[in-house]
Structures are given as C-alpha cells and as structure tokens.
Image (tube, rainbow, N blue to C red):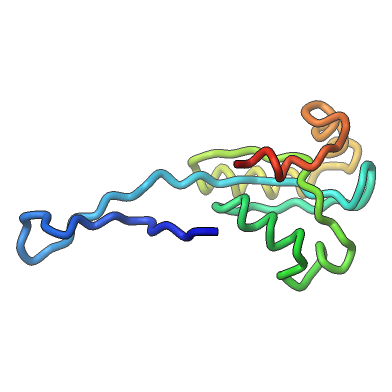
Length: 119
C-alpha cells in the first residue's frame, strides 16, 4: 500500500528562506468491527481507515481485536473534524449494546464486511 506525504512542497516555489506547504484534507473515521453477526464489537477511530482495518484483519496489533478475533468492518462514519471524531468514538463506546446493534443493522443489516468497499 503506497504512502503519500501529507504536505506537498514545490521544488522551486520562488520564495527564498521559507517553505511553502499545502496541506491535504484529512478525513477521520469512527468505525465498528465485529467478530461475527451479533458477536463481539470493537469501536475505534483513525485517519487511515484502509490501513487500520488491514492491521486489525491481519492481527498486526496486539490487543482486543487480535485476542477476540474481531476483524469484520460492519460500520463506519467519516468527518474532517478530528475533535468531532473523538467525541463520536467516545459517545458510541458509552452506548448500550442494543443501540450499537441497531446502528449497524440500519446501514448494514446483513453485517457484511465493508472493507472491500473502501477502494
């Protein structure tokens, strides 16, 4: 998976003594993984959803998802506001289980793995 720089600095910007950088828009994702339909759930937040889900699926990170085989991406939201993403992650983590299940069922009733749709 290629890694792209966050900033592009022109080689000849015509400005002496300082760099000109252009920041690309960063998106943040709040996501829910499941071990199976109605199974164990995990909620996380990232700025690189494809990379993070790949890490979960391939057990590259020690922890909860590896221990309990929670690898199926069943739900995600995106925002350009990192603070909003952090608040939403915290909010979802505090929800009752049946609220989380209803959220998943509304957009993904078959609990299909959404990872392949991320391209």
